[in-house]
Image (cartoon, rainbow, N blue to C red; front, side, top):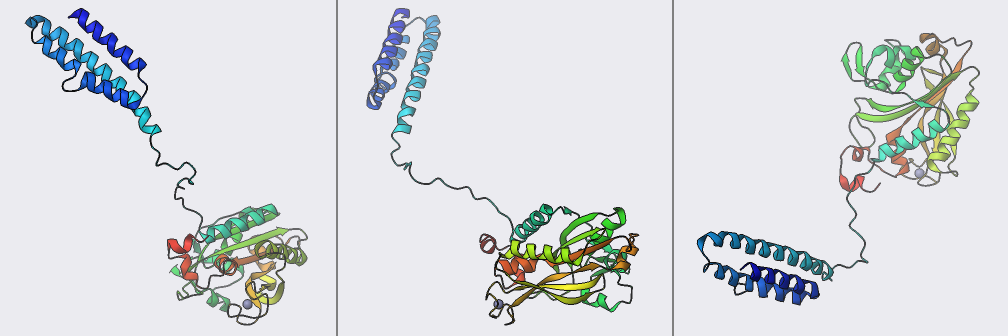
Length: 333
Ligand SMILES: [Zn+2]
């Protein structure tokens, strides 16, 4: 039996070595492993052996059987891959579905890039704010009529959801001495009705520059650069006189309508102009409130609605789409 098993093993090995084709390997499988195959005939031979030898030779045959099965499987598996002619290697691959940035995040990132290139650093502050930071330090005393236009959500008498990002300017000026050159991006809250152009939560970015000899001319120049950066070099802009309690003089920035090029359309209300935000020189009283001498220092501030910029830039006529999380809308950016 010992001799016979050795012959069987050698025979199998040499057959495997000489065989190349898939059909030939299949023939080997049938010849040795099939129901009427050689290995089963050896098992039948074992039955004729004395009891004590049956187990020993049974194990040996089993090992031969397992090795052959394994070798056949390995060789046949290479044919499986080669024969998959249904794969067209020239087809483009499947692109994994990845998320991307919200249009507001994109505008925020662009604005942060613009301002940091001009030496501004990013400052953040709390969204629940004290009355002092949101109003009083910004030159709006308790009974100041300008408070009305901020439509603030009050939590307690002295505590509210910030209605603009200017409180962050106060917080920075309280802690830091000039030169101060910061931008404050973030969320703001007002109890405006939720309609096509108003949302109870919206986004602003403000810039503040305080140092010796800062002039309105620098502010005007920076606004011009910003308009070109955001809307292209052909966009015209103008500064109109305005009023804010925290700046003096105050201005409002308007750009030529990017949709009708200034000819007049529904978006710009046939005026040819779109208002973008407010700006001005920091009011001396505001500097005094944070213990910065207005005799020595001056500064400019500007603020803009980020939602509004995104709506103008991407021609979106309803602010509510920013908050709906509709994937069909978001995928367009
Ligand atoms: Zn227009």
